[in-house]
Amino acid sequence: MRKLLAILIALSPITCSIVASQNIGILPASGVYKNTFNVSINASEGYTVHYTFNGNIPTANDAVYNGPIALSDDCFSHSNIFHIQNCPDVNWYDCDDVDHIIVLRAALFDNNGVRQSQTATSVYVINRLLDRKIELPIVSLCIDSTDLFDFDSGIFIPGRFYDNNNVYHSGNYCQKGREWERLTDFKYIENNDVKISQTCGIRIHGNRTRSYVQKGFTLYAREEYGKKNFKHNFFGDNNISKFKRLVLRPWMASWTGAGIEDWTCQQMASTLLCDHLATRPVVLFLNGEYWGIYFLEEKPDEHYVEDHYGYDDESVNILADWGREVENGSANEWNALYAWLENADLSREDDYNYFATQVDIDALLDYMLLQVFITNVDWPANNVRQWSFGGSPWRWFFFDGDAALVNWRENQEILNYLTCDDPAQTYPSAPYATLLFRRLLANENFRKYSIDRFYKNIYYRIGDIHINPLVDDMGDLLSNEVKYQSQRFGSPVSVSKWKYNIKEIKKYIASRSKTMIEDYAKHIGLDPNNIETFIFPNPSHGTTTLHYKTDCGGVIDISIYSSHGSIVWRQTIDLNTGTNSITLPSLPQGIYYLRTSDSSKVQKFVIIK
Image (cartoon, rainbow, N blue to C red; front, side):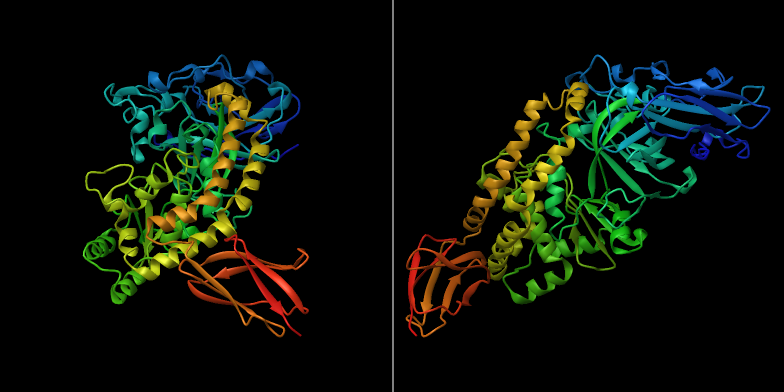
């Protein structure tokens, strides 16, 4: 038998007079169970226990506890909130039924019907009632229905703030700020054990997805709610085990229904210098009702910077939209730099060197070229966030890759996003969003360096050989859950369509890995095929050298064949811009042929002993 469930819910403003010493607990504790059982509520004497099964905080009008409760499907919530339309008609999707878990919430009341304790919440995932086993981690959110569905203040519905003339960006769910934060009981269950169980704040998250049936959420840990952090290593290989905020990103944020575009892009970003978000898939239940597949991930804000870099979060500058919005701190330093850059000439060494003290150029380069590689068509005049601390060089977060990894645009068009200078353009690209990179491209050494770094990033980090196996692994992990997501929200349309989309993502990454370097080089005025090679000395008395000249750096594979056609030596070589001198191995006397992977040209050389 597990230990008595701790009191989890912090006091809300309207219940601040509740006597904290009055105890209530539920046995057994929350978790995953194979079969049904009886539940007992333990409470201080002299009070009446009222309880609910629909996620609401109990009132004196709810059921009275008189003894152990036998759990069964009768204990599923009968509120059927999945039938309540929570979005515009154009986005609404209804279904016949959903899976349930059991949510039991209980509290103590005095003879006058006034609540005298905090609310205890237990969540039971019972495989026999589900008729299946959920393989992903499970998140349970319990939010009082008033906070969700009240016309004036409910955060989950169109409500009072909905405007028929602005269907995607109006409604209660589009309101922001602390006044639109509500209380929720948050439980995180992994490997059948409850890892997190606490009260926290919750707000609707996202942009256009706010108007979808499956909405995103941000969770806020605050001391006033009981715990000031979420303490758990949610992401495994991430050493951070303490978070102030967490995001639940909905499957429906994906533009294609594949669901994994942002996750895949985050895996790429994790190998580069741009700051990325740890993320993992979970299954969400809202007030006991199945709410589909989400990706639990970090939030790119000042707390992220504090967690990853140790800087005081109050002193971190966080800017959005290339400095047009201030999310934390100040934009003064950035505005001064940007004003200087508008008239700067980075082809001049002094200007370039100064700029390099203000911006982490490698981080910016990795960030910009990753966006091009993945063809993010919701960027760069959107989804941009950057940070600095105490005059440190500016860096960029990578987030929101939901519009990526699909051939929405021709290669040249996405490259035009990178260097747009047309003042008539405002979205998805605009001159203000490309100024930094356009100024950098004025520097010839940077142009050559950028294609060299891009080539090596694709070859060693983000190319198909590295990323597509991860896509396969994620596909396997999600495969058993996707049909439930599809049935619930119609996204993806079907499992077969989802499998097709996954294959298309892999094909797209493979295609970009082969074509992107040449396309980018031509766009910035370089020719990666302008290569000069020769072997000297030839003939040689033992060793010889391949002299390889390129304006673009990169990586090549060198193979040496004997006169009989068998491979005698093979090596992968990192090239630098300019002439590279590559010493070939000492070989026995004979005639040999050398081939490089970037050219069909074969060079013959002779060893004389």
